[in-house]
Each structure stands twice: as C-alpha cells, then as structure tokens.
Image 1 (cartoon, helix red, strand yellow):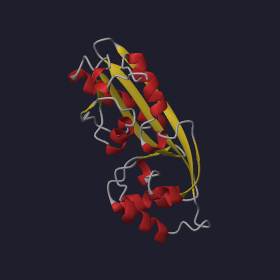
Image 2 (cartoon, helix red, strand yellow; image 1 turned 60 degrees about the horizontal axis):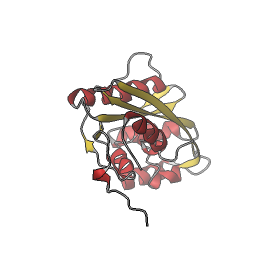
Image 3 (cartoon, one colour; image 1 turned 180 degrees about the horizontal axis):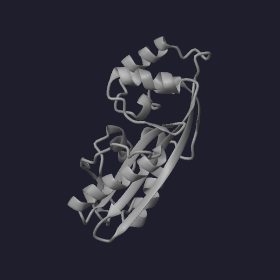
Length: 207
C-alpha cells in the first residue's frame, strides 16, 4: 500500500482564491488541496474599446495582484469570464430583465466565453496569465428556444451572477446546441487544467 500525505501536510505555499464566486470555489475544491478565499475588490468596468478577451485577461490579473498585495507570501489565483458576442462583452446580468435581454441576443448565435486565469506570488515575483476560450452555440428560435423557455430557465436557475446568464452546469445546458473547448471546467468559470499547471509552477504541490 502506498501512503498518501493528507492535503494539509503537503509542502508549498499557501493558496488563495481571489474570488467570491461559489462556482470557482466549488471547482477548486475538486483538487482536494487547502486554500483560502478572499474578495479581490476590483473595479470590473470595461475600458473604452476594450475587447472581451482583453477585459477578461486584465481583470483576472488585477484580481490576483490585488489579493497578492495583501498576502505577499501566498500563491493567489485570479479569474474572470466575459461572454463575447461578436466582440461585444456581456458580463453578469445582475437582474432578471438584463438576463432576458442577454439570452435573447445570444439565441441562435455562437458566443465565445473568454475565461481568463492569473496566478501571482508577490514574494517570488511569479506572475502568469492565460485564457481558455470556449465557443458555445445557442439554440435558435427555430430550434424551440422561445421566450417561454428562457423564462422557465431563468426562474429555475436564477443565473444572474453568471456571464451572459449562462449556467451550463445546470439547466442552462438545455439552451445550447454545441460546446467547443479544450477544458470542460472553463465554461463554469475556472479552467482547472490551466490552473493546475500554473499553481504547480508557482510552488503549490498538487499530488
């Protein structure tokens, strides 16, 4: 039998998730390693003319840097997701009305969910940022995605804290025709394949 040390005994730096998103916290918990959670408190307002991809990358890095300033010895994860509708950024709707508007716009369209991940350790000067682009094709009105289905989905899931009101890990999967990506966790909000690679490079032991 091979003895495996419990997660708390693994050597390496403290890991901090710079996000209050419950979806990202649940994803990171899959790795079975200890981590803390802290709000990055970053202004997420897009810059004039900023592309969705650039916005996601900038905010992921800003979140990681903000928390790393308060915890310089820790390895900090920052992440951000922006729904890219033909170059138009769609963020978290916040309200039912905005969610309806977003889903109507995405109906029958291919939307790229730009999910950025940044890892920072201030003490060592480590800083990496990467992006997982997930191409999602939404069902059209001809496919039956009418306003009644949108209303039922929103009332059931209430995904007002999800980019583009798209919650694919729940009933939102029924809105879609196709998903094309290289990391099944990226659409949920934290691309774990990239996350594992980056935090290992920063000094966090996973296995």
